[in-house]
Image: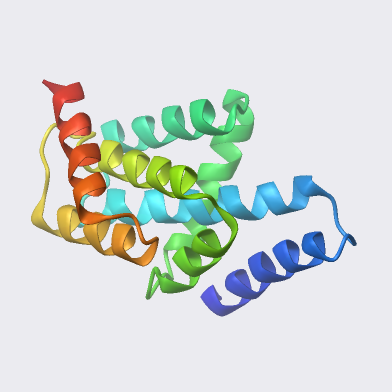
Length: 155
């Protein structure tokens, strides 16, 4: 299942590069990959609280400039896909190849905001966000600044 999602995302992005598909398809694939990572971070502590779900919805809606209905649809699809997630590598590889450094840092920022959505940072959430940041080649220093920014927001 995860393999098929990864193949779907890569095909959407690859076909866009060859001019066969629209930029909309590429954006949809990148949105889904990002949302799957967000859900994965929210579930990292084995508790997916309503506050985390609400925060994921809000961030998806704002970051991707979606309607509430579109955001809910994306989060629900990402949640279904994240159920079988074994490794974040496939998704981070796609994002790393197709996003700028600032866009990758923005994703890490979103992940820190999800990790702090319930008011505390669990060690598993912390570890996962750091790992994803490394896989996206966001420097440790920048990732830590983003972490502190997210922490300040909840205080």
